[in-house]
Length: 171
Ligand SMILES: [Zn+2]
Image (cartoon, rainbow, N blue to C red; front, top):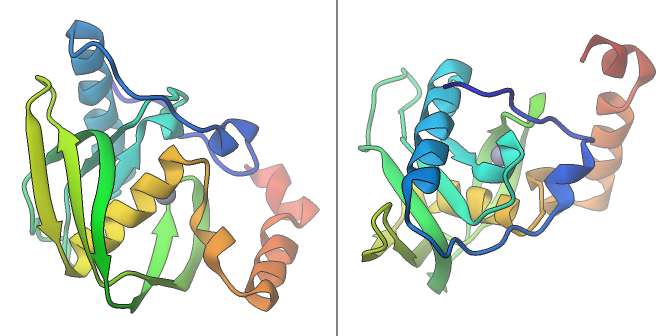
């Protein structure tokens, strides 16, 4: 069932999520709800905390700029970045920060170790959009939003525009 996506400045987005210990029906329901929510919202990734559940769970299903699917659905539990290299810049947005897009500097490639919905070990070497999406969603699990990675100047501009009273009133 699709849930409401929590948006900034909701304080829950600052929470540090905890590891999943039981790979049971509750986890599977959470994953299914997250997928329904992501489909409805038109995102390419979602972290559990974005629907208010502080667990280390994220999903990814990547699309290119024309909306064509370029990856299968990935269900990622308790992820750890085990290798990172290079540097890249990409214009990012976030379902929890509506209508704001800005270039963020991140690692070009990351290797991530995680569990699937049944608790099996998985690891993946990610580059391109997949690498960026992993880093963006793992930031959510650590209570961090993408605009916190911007320069002070760009961040001030964001705070001013996003937090303007007229705009908040519309949310
Ligand atoms: Zn996000």
